Image 1: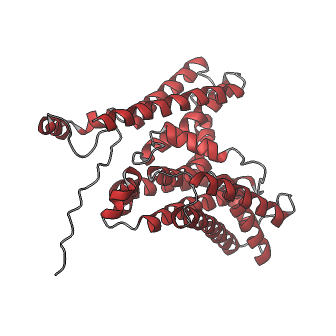
Image 2: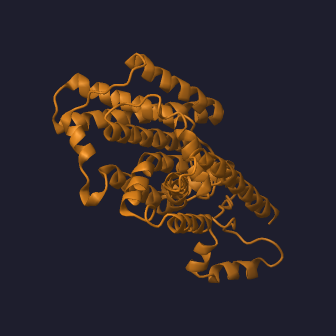
Image 3: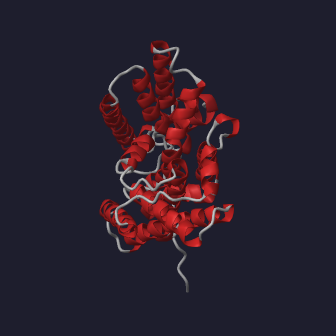
Length: 359
């Protein structure tokens, strides 16, 4: 006679405000009724993306008032959009990983490795046609996915902590890039790639449109698909995710593969923008991406985060950098300001988590 398994209680998945999908306390029904009757606008205004969006708007207003002839211009908007395009693509993948309770320090090195693979692939094929560029881009993305799968296997199956795994692959990917190139940047690229670099449809680089599409698709998948719901559940309560029938190890491998693949896309974008591999130019990319993701409201503890918030968070350092340039403030102050803002964002996340645990 088979034993009927005990029913699985759905895990509490925290939303952006820190509330869960289950009421708690002596006034459970009343609390749930209040949450249910809150307007969508009020719900959004209480989220981290809304708060940080206000901070972003105030920064834009401040620099526009200080330098009205230099900052609020189309050229500044184009520069900021281009500056964040590569970081935003990697930040989408990082958001998925961090929502699931992990993080990936290797993305900057994977970007470099993928760019080198793309350049070497195009050089090996030869020619200047568009198909050469397509083949190189495909090789770049596949190289990124390979590193992501390696990270996922080590973390999910071998149980090596994410910090150690991605720190190790960060060094390994960069070292492999230097071995492949002898430590020198690859500067020979096909003419078709240079045409993409100089093309500006509607005044914006193609890289901006690629970043926008990646953010839009990534946001829709995270918010409205089963894959996205599973990601939130894994980050909120891994054991509950297992009891709900989710193969957590397989899901984590997929998430790190997504992060690595998007780092590969970013590598192709970087090579397209600069027409060189820029091996030594991405040492702080992982830190910048994690900063933007955290500023956008993604919790370091997992279970909370949106792509919309990540977009806002990535814009804040770029606006600061360009604002300091036009106001003739040393750009080093950007690191000071962002450092304290990041600490404040993590502290607020800690307070939300403590309040959620008490409830």
